[in-house]
Length: 175
Image 1: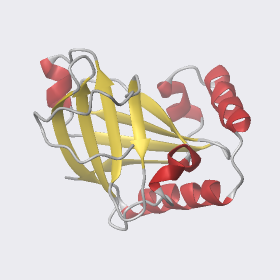
Image 2: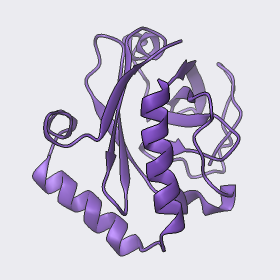
Image 3: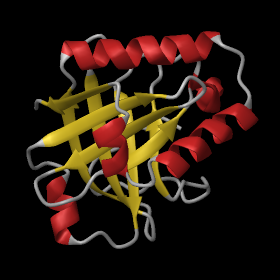
């Protein structure tokens, strides 16, 4: 679910927010990476706005995986993606300027703790855009989506393993 937020605002408590992270890419809007942590530490809050902000993309045919690393201290994390999971948002798209909004939410209070907007380099944005467009045109199978993710996890159990052996594109975003 793509939402408009600001630091200090509280997300709708009636929505079942995910554990970990969520990625949305509605056409005409910035890509939104929402990270849900239980009582985030101040270092985690600061990492959202501290350079470098790094990303990598894995196209698994029926599923995409966005890897991200915020700031110099936090390790790599990942979030799976299929445009069909947000079909109620309309067709997907990567903003033509590669704009990405990163939102850190305290999942215990639903409070936005940090917000940062960055830009993906054109080549990285084009890779993700093409991958998402291809997935959108293909019929969706939840089984295939979960099968791809399970296979990636079996073969590459950590985000670092994916980075080393499997990514289709990677970048350092700019403010």
